[in-house]
Length: 553
Image 1 (cartoon, rainbow, N blue to C red):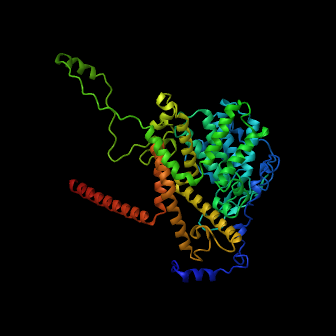
Image 2: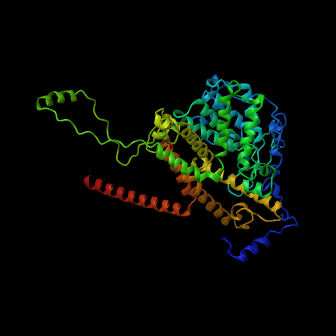
Image 3: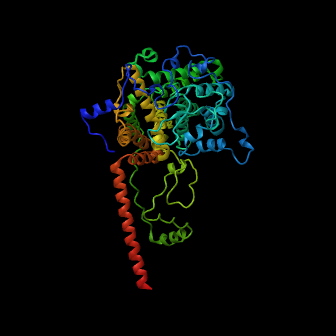
């Protein structure tokens, strides 16, 4: 059926369709689990004032302490052929933007720890160059991994179908940790893997390492690992309105981001998990400060202010205009003949590019995005950095005083893009992330009903699973509108600004815009009409060519 008519009548109809008990809970529905078969994650216990590694990886109530101190790794890859699934997944994570965190994470007991260990130790070689304590690094990564909620999966990958928590371990068969943490649809260990892989792609596929030292690269990867640690599956506004312990502790100012940063800092200060314990105090303090600053920058409240700062950075590091070409010098007539003889030895000019065929961008090749006009798969090459990245590594007096600021701007931009990276992933992957986020919104709406006498205080269109009643078509249309709004207000402005400041990211901006249009019925209709016109014109050209060939025969 179609959407129910608006107005008071529609609201009354929805209220009658779902009866609520004295506590404001829908009769016959357990909102604590949302649409899941497990309880949602406790709100208070993950935010204990005492951060003790010996108890639940420092977070009471987030599961049990990891029963191991060594990250499980497929070390046999050095000599084993063919490679295992995990080995291939790790290699792909280091090589392609089109990597799927969901497919990888559901097969791992400690997906974040294993991925981080591979990227920091094996792929990038940072651990060796920075003299990190690998035993402490393992304990740190395991503790952070266990403090994230377990993956949640949707058996059908259709929006609105109940998700369920997947026990840690191979394909959900269970394992050392079990489900443990309760339901968090989006901000769980899979999201942490996705953001880490995205940050690594900016560093090693996008040319960012040309502007950063190894300490900065490690700070960015660690920030990606911890940026949502202990996330309870609700937003800052919910924590403030419910006067949560963590909201009171931070006076309501970005309580989630501040607690993520606090938890990471506390864990890095523990002797058993201080993986940079061989550094001097000043160098270690810089690392801790950079991680904290990067994590706090993920607060969406300051999103547009950061974009303005990124545009300012782009203007400040803009290279000078190219001078006009120098006119050719006149050559005496008696030298023209000898010049012609020299020209015979020059190699022939390169053939011009075929008309209508676009040259594949370096970023697209480096990120594994296939060239539709290429016969062979693109070679994975890291292209030269753009002028703005080069400016951040410039040692000239003009940039020396602000070099640290420029580097932090680039690192922050990369982390924020990685945090919203699913907007630029292949559409099939991006859609799964949208579905997971929507389920987390609905679960928060259920908690709001419990906390506020049956009322959903957030936007009912996005957080109230009963807002559209039984009209599944209207519910899906609501998800489409919310997704489009997020693209237009937050996603595209960020990716466009990053693409302007770091030209190697232009392919991601284009991919995000393409995904956005797939949620827009108008854009979908226009694309279908355009493709129909092109097909009709191609058919007419083919008919004319066939007729001409017949006449010539």
